[in-house]
Image (cartoon, rainbow, N blue to C red; front, side):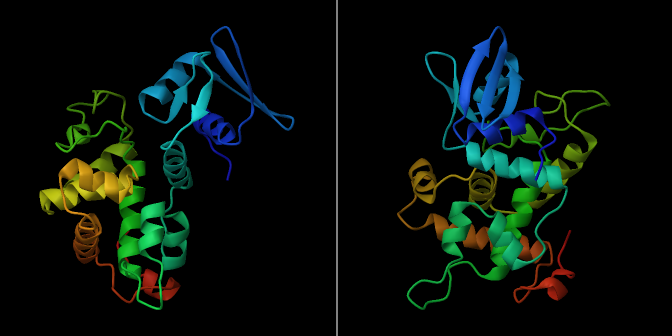
Length: 238
């Protein structure tokens, strides 16, 4: 899929380890005859969001957050969200994929409706244009008070405002731990071990809270437990 955003195109090529050079205030990437460039201020913005890191020479490099950010940009660019379990798994992050696999003949920890709920939450977060500094108090969900006003410290499109309202409405109906883990896993793709460390939870407890949160999301959005194919997907909440 072709990305519309120059930032996304730059980051997509950066993941492939291109040749880099900096001339003045422009970063240039070259890979197999293809070229891409981005102003220095935009590269610094990506660094401030935690999407890339810069070395001592000022060259940009991918980091642990890069792939997740690009995946969210792809969802936002498509304007669509997964409607079947297969498409939901394909677009899922590593945590959701791992928990949705069957191991040793046992049922997966996350059922199909959990996976689809996670995909829809990820899509809403991506289209809400939330930055990586969203905190547990959800301050970045603040909406502009008037047209052209600031929301979360930066310009926010009408589409993003609508999806922030949708996300805020969802989170308001969940316990605080469930709100936090949905943002951490579906939004920022944190590892479960890191969440447990940050929250002071026992080992292997984060996945239980995650499943509980996704069960609540599925119930609120009318995602059926047996919905695994295109026909049943038509019954899912948009």
